[in-house]
Image (cartoon, rainbow, N blue to C red; front, side, top):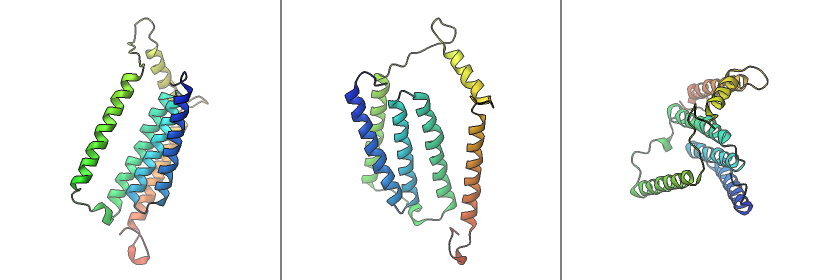
Length: 184
């Protein structure tokens, strides 16, 4: 992605590294579960930034979809399975709403700028010079392949891990508070 301009590449690498360390420290130091999950989501998003710097856009997309998407599932578990005071917030203040609006607009502007700078060619299947059809077919074959180059086994392991997390969260939620802990 940034092969020609090594100075910019180095600056982005150090900025991502600083952000990763900062969010990781915030993640382990906060006492609120939702904030901790949000910081974990930020750390995993920074990891996707590393993939982008390495020119691995597909892996960055997978990082966002699988890992950051998994954190959204964690948010749902936290909201549904805990009865926390921090989740009972009725109305955000005007300042928080304005901050959210500002961050949303900045993220949108950043996305527009990044997409306008990127050189993503539009390749239609069947046109000369277009290999997108064969690349999609190859990814499909690998997703269903059980061999050493296939991805079926890793996806099955991840599904078992998510199932274990679901069972664990239900067990924690049902743990009786009269016996010393738990959410209920």
